[in-house]
Amino acid sequence: MFCLFSEFATLCETPNHDPGYCVEIKSCTRLLSQLNNSNARSFLRDSMCGPENEDLSNPKVCCGRYTNYRNVSKNIASLDVLPKNCGTQKLTLKSRVVGGKEAELGEFPWMARILHKNRYNFKSFGCSGFLIHSKYVITAAHCVHDKFLEVRGKVYAVHLGEHNIETEVDCMHGICADPPQVSRVAKVIVHPDYNPNERSQYNDIAILYLKKGMKVTNFIRPICLLEDPSQKPHKYIVSGWGKTEQDRVSAVKMKVDLPYIEKENCKQSYKALGMELIESQTCAGGEAGKDSCNGDSGGPLMMTTNGTVWFAAGIVSYGIGCGMENWAGVYSDIPSFIPWIKTVIVETNLLNPKSLLIARRKGGKLIKKNNDTESA
Image (tube, rainbow, N blue to C red):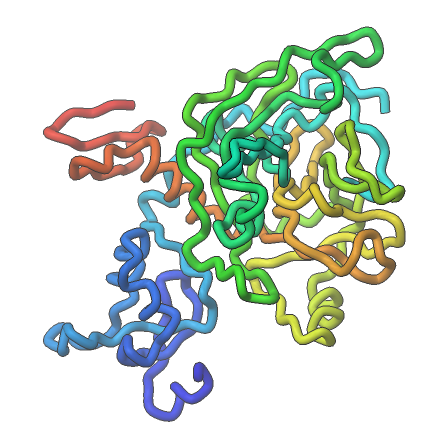
């Protein structure tokens, strides 16, 4: 449908700065499907491209190629809502995951395990996730979407600070970790453009808003989020409790390094299977015996630029098998979702949804404007 617009519509630019065509909203299924989505209202308003006196019952909108809209204003996108002290590990390191080795105690302290509870009150762990803020954990949308929770049950809680899931107290090299911290999940926020029936799993990202904030320790810390897509590492790291090369779920946190791969090479491989990768997806891996695997979904694709500060560059989404040569894994690209992530944090925590609040930057502080009061 997109290519047909050019015959009768003018070019325009979407709020995401992507090219599009100015058409009646009834002709743009991507935006038409979001009319009842309260989170998309500002994006829909900013997408209007017709004359001011047009028929508001069928307004014209700038219809872009991608469904990954970012419902965020420039003011919100510029807010410092993510922690500055992130991506650091306090312990000195001695040195699923297929082809990996056991992580050190306290290594990757942002790793989270997601606990589910079904209608029979049976609890079980599912995917991984990672802490980005004391009350926010990122995971993959396919891990927490209702369609996939019929057997496992709803998302119930998040565990952080775990290493060996079979021991109450984790010790290594004469050092013992603090007990894990657990928080119930207050809200599961799946990206509004995620479609569980989409084979290529676009927008495979979700945020878990916790009922209580996690206390930062040597064993629990948030990871930084990669915002600059131009930063490319020589290699990535993935970590988790997923299946190992013995096809068993690991009892201990594992880690493995994955090579950086040019996205175009990865796109061609998946295109042969009828799967089109888009801007908001990235790839890593492709070496035999090294991969993220079942149980690692939702965990971070990690990189470091200086060896001391770690960034989440992606989210484990899917792949062909586990550790198959020449088949890189597919990850949701974190830089593509930074505006949406910040918007979720602002809307759920920093702003009061019951009153008219206007957020802006002032002297590096977040200002809440409500009856002329300010709170930093």
